[in-house]
Image 1: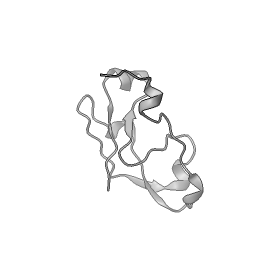
Image 2: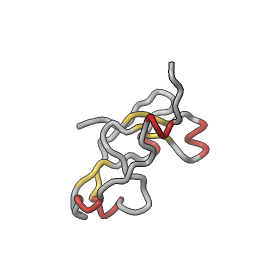
Image 3: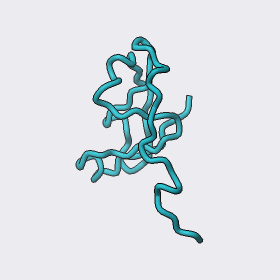
Image 4: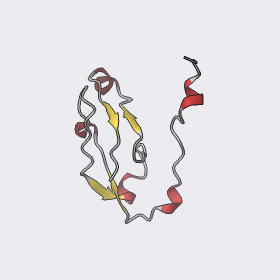
Length: 85
């Protein structure tokens, strides 16, 4: 098995082309409460207008790995793969 740096195997925090989304476009919104602890479940049923979430939240795409950055959620194992529609 060949070991490579993570940056050669995946794209970490890829840029999202935000110019394609109008402020009134409905997008998935996944609050930390919607991410299961240690089971990988994600409830992506909440939608919000893009204008409400375009600042202050982390953007993600289908099949991205979501991993909590805040300590309590990280300790609880909150992570999963974003669902595809």
